[in-house]
Length: 356
Image (cartoon, rainbow, N blue to C red; front, side):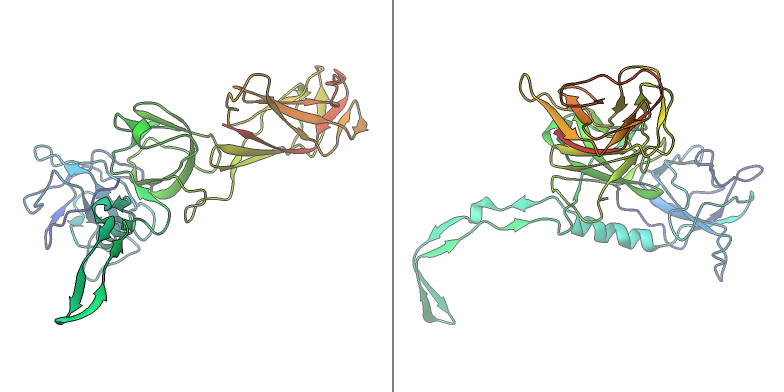
């Protein structure tokens, strides 16, 4: 999870980078002096281009994981942490280490996003006479139930360090299977808040379903959380993805794809409003979520809302996905009739639900 930020009150220094820094730079940010940083090995926040009164049009807040005491360079920097985007800054601008919204917000998030805690030792039956102010008021037995404490928004802080592995994978500490499972929702911050659905868990790696709304970037990860709930606060209704269709020499234009999940069930929707030019007797699209293996011989199908084959309108098109597959195939009818390997074809719209 994102660590709380440490304070170095009333300390200012200057940026010591020849030529200054640009708006995208997250490494090579060096301070002239760090003697006033009380805990350089801990995460904190600095304010570039500080002035009094503050000019928010030119200043910038940024967070860091630690400061190297030898090189005086900030590491794990996240630019534009508050109140606007990152900006370019000249060498020698004043750098302050003030208290800010991030300090308070992280404390609030930590208090409202704690792991559920159960106090089972309070469960049981107590017998006897109970008095208030010396006067017998309650005669036993008295039953005490377990007390549960947990987050109110459905999210749990991971208390782990997450790092970039690829656009849809995240490195996590060993033992991930003891905390995360397929179907869990996750969210994390890389300048903005991002969301994903876990599709695979290994000992040190989480894989999320590919989408075009949120990707893991090669940058520091903070505020990382997970949820076992179906609908934690703020989680997107759906994710969009790029539709890749097979069976065409010229694919249809304007294709749209999206998916949503509940537990370990995925609903994938594909719209193909225009026709393309056929060059095979098949038609298929690639889903971002692979179908689970449930039991031998089971596959999942859905009726398609119309389409075209060699320019002729079709009403009986059926789609399906097999176990351990990410390919949604389309047949002209339930008898798996083949498409014409020429002319205009498409399968206009389908929504198919299956486990993953």
